[in-house]
Amino acid sequence: MNTIKIYDNWPYDTDFFARITAIDGNTITLDRTLFFPEEGGQTCDHGVIRCNGNEYWVTDVQIKDDVIYHTLKSTDGSLNIGDEIEGHIDWAHRFDNMQNHTGEHIFSGLVHLLKGYDNVGFSLTENTCQMDYNGKLTDDEITQIEAQANEVIWNAIPVDCRYPSAEELATIDYRSKKELTGPVRIVTIADVDICACCAPHVRTTAEVGLLKVISHLNYKGGTRLYIACGKRAFTDYVQTFDSLTDIGHLFSTGRPDALEAVKKLISSDQELRTRLADSERDELMKQIDDNDTGVILTQITDRNILTAAFNHLKETHDGACYIFSEKNDGGYTFLAGGRDIDARELMPALKELGARGGGKADMVQGSINATADRIMAVISPT
Image 1 (tube, rainbow, N blue to C red):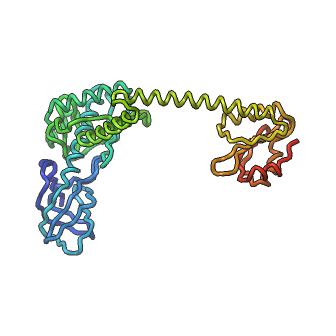
Image 2 (spheres, helix red, strand yellow; image 1 turned 90 degrees about the horizontal axis):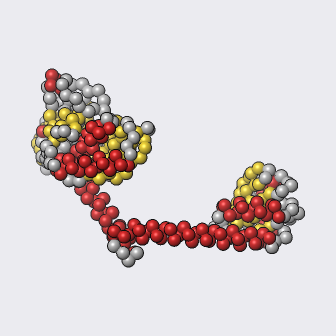
């Protein structure tokens, strides 16, 4: 027997009565329910079922062939077919889903109107609201659509959810991610969107409250986009506001100037890093010029500096050349080779030190967990 979907017509109700029609372990079916199942890319409702003086947490709700299955945390064997139950929906979770799902319809409707793109993917979880479009949106276009979406919200446009007759449905140009058969529920936001949808929605766009695009990226030739609506958007704003305030305090400035202060810090850091790299390069080159053995031990770890220094070492010294760079956790990384030798011939001696690595004729490289004294005892440059 198909389950009557109370949530279709009464999405704001939180309590209902029903009778158990089937029991399979911890999963029961009811003749009617307010629990929205996992469907249409949206997570299911949360809540409890009370029966015979006991309370059971609903951990999952699924639908198959119009029958809705409620999985309970446990049933303790006290439920029976025909028992009357009282169900209670977690309203905070339900309304959060309603705000974000209606927000998705607003945004996707505008994308379709303005760009002609289809929403080909949708996922609404407890933490994210993700949409995939089959066309690329630029940063400016996303900013424009976000602004228009919030105008739609502020205009408090009614959100109409209904099952039109088959004859009427044939005349409606509605969005849908797949071909549908049987009764089709149409959600309409006048002049914004007409879309097939099975989920509960808010009464008017005003109840979405606020829509903010959190992030977006190019995805499979189109655009993947994340939004936050209502309480989620407010929570994100508060967290961002508090973080920006704290950053401002660190720089002894207000929120409007915090970004500029961070930019200055980054610029200063980059300048200092450049100056440090130049200093380390000069130091290592001088060490090479003052060295007669062709073996250099250093605490400098910058890969670009080490490579440039090694090339300089080979140019200014005959025979085998080595640079050993001290690691933070002990031991060294190394570069080895020479102008007129095959660098790979140096690896046997290095492997006596437990070296790991390899390379080509012009240079070998890797790491060694050995002391400087042990290295100098084994390496005999020529």
